[in-house]
Length: 98
Image 1 (cartoon, rainbow, N blue to C red):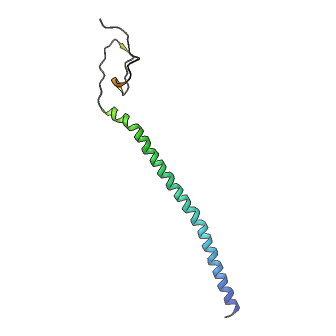
Image 2: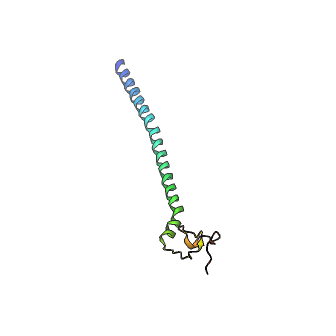
Image 3: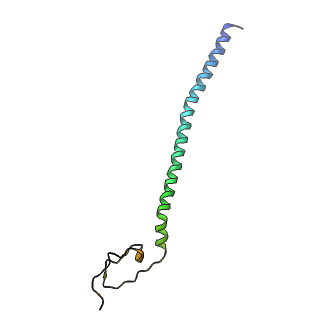
């Protein structure tokens, strides 16, 4: 086998090794970034569901038709979504009934 043929094989092998290492150097960080982005999306989705679960009881109570009937002479009657279920410690008689 001639000497230049042996040098060609070494050069090809070295080129293949260099290209393989280059591709590996690109693939590994890209894969790590994809995994990190997936993990972040998973946690963002979990947090969004957690916020919905925290607000859900208010939505359910808001849908139920609670009606508050009160005398015109009362002051500071709760008019929030809680209605009569709100604390009544701040309610007072503005003009007492006769």
